[in-house]
Image (tube, rainbow, N blue to C red; front, side, top):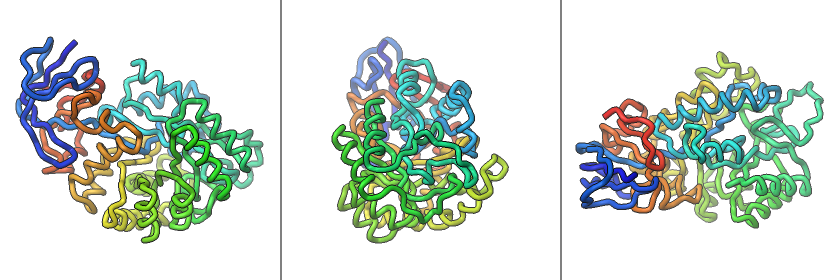
Length: 401
């Protein structure tokens, strides 16, 4: 069926301009923008603002609880239906594409693609790769259970060049769009320090080589400047978090044409809600070490021209705060540049330029109709009530016009 969205104020996310026009949608894609005579169905937008669906480049659809250690003992038959609820809620906030940064696999992405699950499009990488005792190893100091190369639903434990190559090849065989590695310690893991380096240089090189051979890329969880800089020098294309980066990091991002995905909101959520939602005390005590430095890192990266993509990294019930990242970025960046992080920059990162993240002919009809131009009020994106229509691939999931 052909669908015409008429009298729309179309936001060009590249330059911020607004054009009054019509959009014809056929077979889930934008087939024409401009003067259109007829369509099987017409919705008069009546001057409301039309913008592309949002993209979140750091979610965990299987992270159904703040205490990730509990996932070790939770069967997939329980995790998956809980994840489906989280995924539908993401779509209803206006996120039509998400990149899962550890956990989601071919099966759940295929179920979304075939329409069995109401969800954003899932760009998946499978479990993240972590060394023993690293950020993906959820065992406590006193837990000597054999890991059997598996941490939780979100991680895979591997050590040594041969083992990491095999793990990378397994993910590639499983259809991964990217491979995530743990390059430094983290907040949610029980036994590693934030400032630790994880994986040897030889191991990282091996994973990067396997990813490059398959024409995909590696993203790295990294906090400290030492971890960030080492990862970039070794060929990692995208850094998650980077709260403690330095000026050399900025130069390396530019030199290697790499991306930064900051995730400010997760630290505020963990600080405010972590304890009550079951975050272990050791993890809770780590939050302050990265909470205050996150904004400083973004300020440095933004001033230096680093390409950034929107990310949230929220766990469990805290995922309801997914849109609050916009408010935190608004303290540091211009509205158009913030919108870039959740549209064209994110589309470039996931290899979907021209398909998602902007309103152009040939792109998927991932569209939002808003009462407010977010470039006039970026905070308007925090209120899903401003979104009158949410559409993914031409299918309308919300229409309150």
